[in-house]
Image 1 (cartoon, rainbow, N blue to C red):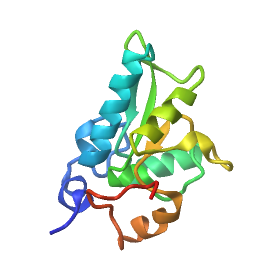
Image 2: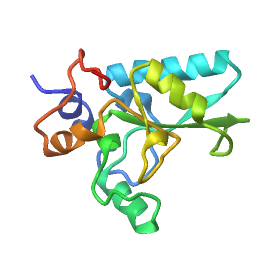
Image 3: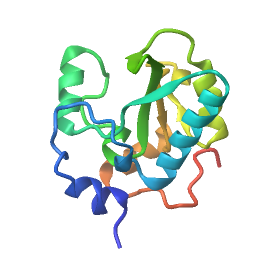
Length: 153
């Protein structure tokens, strides 16, 4: 038995895409459920969020790095179905304006790490189901979270 990355993502025809992909079906199921819960709870509290990017290929990561939009040259947590960028929905269009601290609180409540607290490269639109400490083993292919993994324990 593999994991969501091996069984779904690596076999998807968008695996090498350079486009922005916002398909929540490319989020590992527990991450997907948390993202959906965050969007619903935010909307119920007057904050309309939308998924901007879920899966990200190495080719797209390289493009972002070369533009200076990311400090990661190699793929990050997005590549493994464990991260999502959420932005404001303004008339069906993405907006990165405003305070995203509510997203941080909702991410924590639903078991995701919020990138807005990272001291070296704050990313206030980013949530993920993987601690920074676990990323090295994720990227090496030696670890992938099981259904019981909680990044806060």
